Image (cartoon, rainbow, N blue to C red; front, side, top):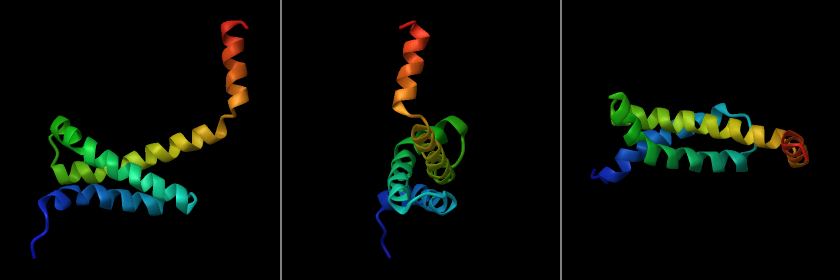
Length: 97
């Protein structure tokens, strides 16, 4: 069975993102967007994580996919919690307007 090496290189990031999909409590459309973001983060970030940490590329891909989705989910949660009008009022009050 011949599997393209490019696919096997990115498989751990996909698996890490899939694990995170089932750990995140959110709507399915948002989970799908987070899954795509997690796979992209693992594809582009895992080589750098592996290089900097000295970890195997597969482990770095899995962990990058897993934790990037957690970070993205929390970022979306914060954005949903902050109302734009409140944010603009705080900024204007801070600069004295």
